[in-house]
Length: 267
Image (cartoon, rainbow, N blue to C red; front, side):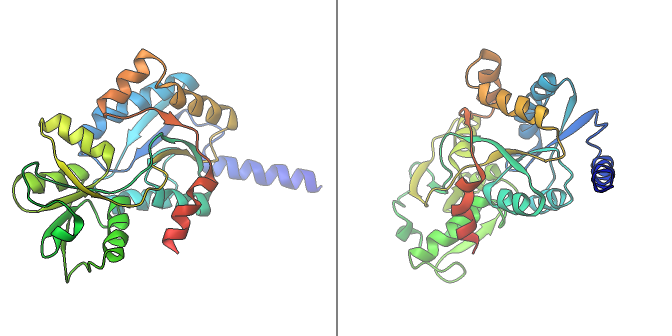
């Protein structure tokens, strides 16, 4: 009787999550780039992952970080590319499973114009720093870094928040900010796109990077195929071409415990 009840409950769970009959999956990507650039970089990846499981994988993002976080909390996405602070939330609440992360660590790099006379974080006292949205990982890391260096936002330094990493760096070029806090991959993408080299004057502590995750409702056999394919992108020509669109380095395996350092930062 207990076995029948367990089977019935499992069937109800499967039906409610649509995993039994899913003919397509949603890949959610946090809006760290403008929509057109996100489409250019991640749409081929979605199509490629669909091939390995013989299902359609559709790309989805959101207009703001907050809306994307809301969709994560609604468990909208079957697969997602998220920042580490979002990962620990959805892993602990919904059981999302880490698939692969970038080989380098994530930090916030403070950049200025190449001809700027600003050279250290202390030189930014009384200046304006542009950032992506307040909930972005690089914004959270920078706030902690500024306090460690006795620079209080709103008192010693003015912070402004913008829609994406690219719009943050644009503020430097148009003279609306003295510096921008961003991440290395976004910096590479922006410099390549704009044909400009920005000057790095400071860098925060490093944590595990942005990562691909997957909802536990996706069958384990498909999870394994998707993980394997992401890890292969750095080894074949089609994968390297996809990575190059976003100026991305290859991905590597990651475990949940690697993000305990992020959990400590939140506490």
